[in-house]
Image (cartoon, rainbow, N blue to C red; front, side, top):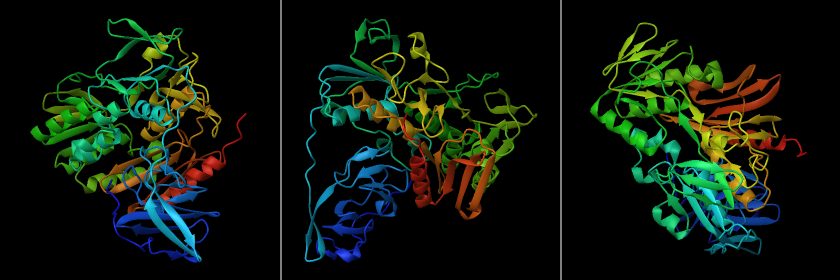
Length: 510
């Protein structure tokens, strides 16, 4: 995702503008001292905050103001206009805020305001909290606990050997070679030290006693915690065909996986991607950008048709073919040899690298062995608490009661995991925040970004408006005439509006 431009643009807000130039519920991009500033008017309040989202620097002036909040058009982060606080993922950092003065019918933006100090939280009884999993949900939970004022012991256990990563980057810009590795890490080691968050890398948790809330690592003793968050994520599905364990057959989930793929791509110039999933297609685009000859193998007739419908599926295929990717659809993998892949239809594809993108499986073994309720994930209540008091679950493993659909759902997307990590952290502190979120995800393939809000695992009608080939469209997904989800290409404002409409349609809590 390219960054929005920043710096001096728009009026110099330090010199002031007429109040009439900023209508109620209006936004105005300007600058103060060479820094991009967004001026917003909500009711009687006028606020000045940084103009770029702190996630990927999306232009907030093109976003959606809802009350005293502003939502980013790119990836739907949400900020408080009054405090600058990042209220919703994927943003982690707050916006800078500026002092605003009104004088003689004019508005002046003054100096940047200092950040308010964190107030101690009331959960004094929680002296030790554990987070199991170093992905999106685990990292978001750890940060949120500190931001909410929790000052007790906080330990994050990760089975991976690297610090928490921006996992979407692994199949997009970093894999494509257009982003340096330092961009991949969500936070630095120094950040965790300053926040007094103990990160235990390469330390998979192998045992959980739900009654005593105790964890066991390897052959070590059990260590009890006052509250535990399970955020163990998911593991990639693997092929079960002859040759599937050869060293050039890889999956993509971790930074180590991505490094291995990049190394293989540098040594060989032919790749077979098995699976036309989002991860498969994103990886195909990234490898093609690196100059690798890519073939995609998948059983369906149209890529992503089950999720996105025939129109967007056909568009994605054409987009990839324009970049040299070849599709072998209606086929599966029969066997893998050191230098080729044999397909079920008799074809043989040359391959120096085979990348499997055939989905993931939630890592629920720890919870199941501890006796927690499971069923297509770890079952949680509306506050993300499991069947055992004091043990919460978030992210890819969490199956929660969705108030919008009236169904229990589980979502395997980055933004949902981060938002649930924040909700779970607050509920560990007794704040009782419901998990009432509208799922959102995005995919970037070459220079096309597609956004999706809602949840439609099945649908009976896909209604297209606009033209995918012109990269300007919206598709609504319906079940029995009820809209369940919306996908858009370069219609960011409409995507935000659809997300808000889903929120407003949510039934009252019982």
